[in-house]
Structures are given as structure tokens and as C-alpha cells.
Length: 486
Image (cartoon, rainbow, N blue to C red):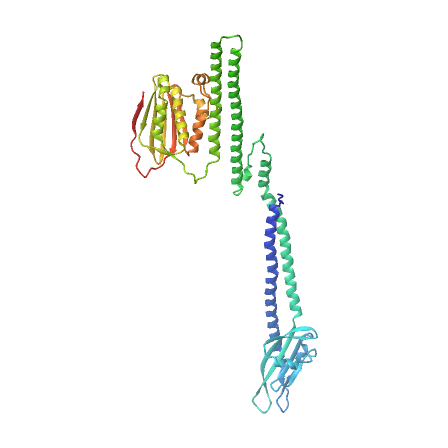
């Protein structure tokens, strides 16, 4: 499936520019509306002022009918303006020469309206005023009502509005272009730590696991979690690869040693002619060596299965069986009683509570068996191995305490490593393969618990297993008492 790549920088710049482009389109429109309202208000004020000046030009005609007329000052009206004046009898007192059909517009009673003359648009104001006519010696005055129409061209106004819109549009486009340039530079610098992370991640290989996020990327709140997550994941993968390589190397070494032992036994048998009894004895030694190799392979498979189950846990819907830990420990202790007698070691179980844990019975049995077997093998003759069971704060603890030879301080951090043996000669004596504690750790982790070891050389060892316990029917755990095998 081909996936087309795209640039995050371009998308971000495009999104920002699209938003700003919308603003660029809205700004000139709003500016045009504002300028239009402002200019036409100014135009209306100018119209009213010029109409009032025309009203001031109306005077007495000094005729017997007491008529009014324009005094001639209206001739100073700008050439492009239009006007018309009518008295209350409907007589046209005067009009501009460029408005030949002005009489027809007096029928429009709106204060402001538009007219078109010779393809020119005009805004016309209608002003109604009253002039006092003085008849001279007759005394008193007569009020004469007049109507004035005055118009100005709107083309200059629209030109001013268009210029304002063009100006705002040009400014907006300029700002848009500057924003695009600034965004490209800023995003380029802002995404540089991300590109550095990508470049560093691209260098990761099976032979090169070094990944150290730059201090700049760790200071960025959005990138710090990504950098730390990559560092953590790669560190875990590196440890996993190293463990796998070490496991394969150790397993190959162990199997090679086992095969070499079988081969040497066969070579010893075939060095010279032997009687049937000697051949049978030699074959029994080969059989024992093969059994040891088979046990080694079986233990390796068990550990591999436990670690595989730990990495890919089963679905939560599956029911996990419950195991009575006290009962299981007693069963294992009785099973190992004969082995303890061979080493001259006694076993005791002290249970303050009946602990029920979630886990497969065979795995829990293997855990208890490995811990007790190790404690028995590494205890001095006449010593006692104690198993203590107790519950606290919803957790169950099992302690396996011996007073044996103990473990050297420098060896403690490695006791859970596969095939690790702190003392090779002791391992040969006990027959251990260095996988028992690794299996115990895998079992405990699969149960959601933890396992730790405390030891002093020559004083003994304490193994602490901490496990979550299951509350059985809501009952308070009952005392388990003391049990001894000697």
C-alpha cells in the first residue's frame, strides 16, 4: 500500500494562511462598509450645508404679488452640483443648467434619494424652508414656503471608498505574505528539535542503540514526552536484545558443555576393550548425562514460556485460578523432606494467615519448589530453613530464610540473571544450572508481585516474595499456625 507523504510544516503554514486569508477577505469588506458609511454621512452633511446656502439666497422679489426669488448668489455653486428651488405655488424659482428635468423630482418626498443625470449618479437632499418676505410700506412680513433640492455626485465618494478598500486589501496581502515568510522561518526553527529526534532515531540499528535526546528537545513541553518515550523504549529494546544474545550465548555454552560431557563419557568407554559390566556402567553415565541435558533444555523451555507469557499476557476475561499458598507450601515441603534429610536440614513453616493468591497452581508450585530447593542445597548440615507466611495491607508475603553460606555482596545484583553462578565449584556440587531464580522472578512478575533477596556471606539468605492476595468470601484470614518437618 503506497502512502503519499506530506509536510507537516506546509500544512501548518497553509492552515494559518487560510485563516489569515479569510481575515484578509473580511477586512476590506468591513473597511469598505465603514468607509462608505463615513463618507456618505459626510456627504449628507455637505448636502445639507449647501442646501441651506441656497435657502439663504431666496429673497423678496419686490413685486405686487409678494413673490420670492433667488438673489443670484447661487451662481457660485460648483459646476458639477445640481439644485432646484420651488415655492409653495409650485413655481420654479431657479435650477442649475445641468439639471433640465428637475421639476419631476419634486414629487419625491424622501429626504435623501438618488438620481441619474447623463449617466452620472447624484445624491439629492430635499430641504423645506420658510422665508419672510417684507412688502415695504405695507408693514409686517409674509412667510413664504420653499422647497430646495440639492445634489452632489457620488462618484468621488465611491472612488474614495474603493481606494480605501484597495489600500486595506494591499496591506492585508502584504501582511499575509510576511506572515507566510515568518511562519516558514519560525516553524523551521521550531521543528528543528523534532527533525533532530527523527535523525537520531534513524541511526538506531541492531548494532547501534545509542539514543540521547538533545537538551533543546527536552526543554520543549510537547517534545519532551516523545524524546523520553523513545529513549525508554530503545533502552528496553537494547536490554532485551542484550538479554537474548546473552541467553543464546549462555545456552549454547551450557549445551556445548553437556554435549562435551556425553562425548567424553563415550570416548572413555571406547578407549579400550571392556567387559559387559563396564560397558553397562559407561552407558549408565551417558544416560545420566543425557538426562541432565534433557533437564537443561526443559528448564530453558520453561523459562522461555514464562517470559513469553509475561510479554503477552492473556485476555482479562479468562478466569485465573486461585491457590491456597499455605497448603501448597506444606505440600512442597513434604515433597522435599527426603532431600532435606540428605543435606541434614530441617524445614519449618510459620503461617500467620491463610493466603490465597491468583495464579496457575503448577507455576506457584514451581516457585515454592525452586526457593526451598535452593535454600536446602545452600544450607549447612544441621541448619533450619524457615518459611514464613503473613498478610498485610492486601498483600501476601512469603519469606524463605536459611542460615547457610550466604551470597557475596558483589553477586547479589546478578542472582536473577540467567545461567549466573556466583560460585562455580558450589554449582558443580549442587548441580544447579543458574536458571532457578530466573524462573522464580518470571513467575512472580506474571502474578503481579515482586521478589527480592537479602544475604550476608556466611550468615544466610532471606528471599522475600510479595504477592497480591485474593479475599476469599470476604472472610478475615485465619491463623495458620506452626508446622515443622525435621
